[in-house]
Length: 554
Ligand code: ADP
Image 1 (cartoon, helix red, strand yellow):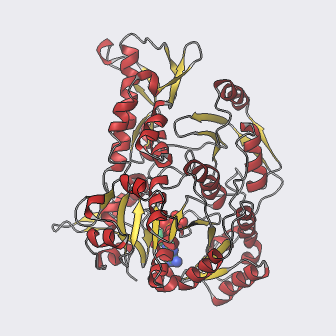
Image 2: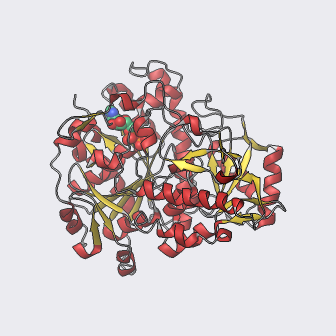
Image 3: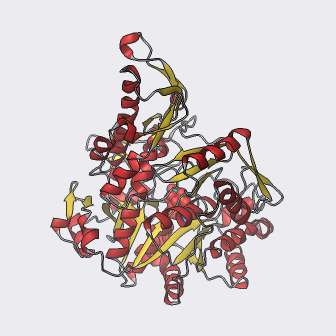
């Protein structure tokens, strides 16, 4: 069996100019980043302002096993299939981070015969967006410490600085650090820490920005800490929002690449799916909607996290109206939720128990008044009886379902899914309604998500979180949406509760203000924003030969 990278390297890749033509743009609309990548200028969106949008399809998933259940793979396969059927379709995906690439999870360009290329470039450095975001973030950090060292006119409380430094790497040794050591010339010593770049608020803001000036406004309002008299301090107080935004001028332009079948894909922005909202940029999604009849996008983790935030945060901020949700389910993950240990062995019993997880995600997506299609992402170990069981179950629920074989067969393997999705889109699908109103208090918003989406009985707030609820109101941030941060392994906030848990309470330990990105992060459990590498990191498998040919990426 060929590896993902072998398949990607054997593909017939075309010059990006051909893809540019395919989406109806000209050379004036883009900037080349080598032969196979381009950035699209933002004036294109202005020019197409009055053009009708295509339909927006979100690909999400059931609660996954650690390897992922194939959202990116199905997203890429679905757009390939639609193009194969002669439809115009563009996908919009997230950019990979080097942390997972060298850690455990691998890249994020799909898999098998449903991939985005050039795979090595996209996974390593790409067009430099993550670098720009990291530098922009660290400019703010440097200016904070410089301000303190230069007399501290803002009266910054050095014990209450929430702005960290970032690097795009899994590096647990940087979680707790002391900076400013070495005497007076090196500044004021204080405790600090590093986040992975994708966890930066700059990444979230870039993905939620509707224009360059909107991004500047967002950066201006980012809270980096508090003064000794309790005032929230922003990047605007440091007078550097212009400089920070200047560093992001190119990074804000969506990146255009292609699938293995030479169909167009935007890959742009990749915020963490827990302390941020986990979706690609609004600008790339809008471009996909203007340039095709079917824009296919995905959101990180399962539907309780990624889709909820896509529907309650991203769609609201971008004024987007999604039309259909595809939920990716796998036999192995459903068996896992039914308590099976050996996931490649047939077990209808485990499947029957575990399918409650899929049911809950279907019910949840229907709360947004959106049609749902289930895509069964087929693995070689699945048996016919297992696949039939899921199909029959969905039919009994009157939920459209399709077996999806894009990993093994590319677009051809996604035709059945594409047809089901198109059938849904032919009906009246402009009924999207967010789960909660922004007028609710932050506490009520969190309770609504926990009860309606997770299935919790209620929510407990730590004393710190209760205090913060008050502060948020006093500072005037109460009307922001909530970005939930919890384990992706369970519908609940307890990773060990598989299936469809009931009778639990969600505990919120901490609330953080992301005023620039425009949401309040509610932390349920200890979520790490600087992952570590596993004992045997993927880095040990990656190699390059004298011709520059890379192997071992996945
Ligand atoms: P997600 O987006 O849900 O995290 P991905 O699409 O990135 O998942 O897939 C995760 C990994 O699983 C990739 O390495 C991909 O090649 C692999 N994969 C996805 N679907 C299949 C499949 N049907 N059979 C085998 N491997 C698959």
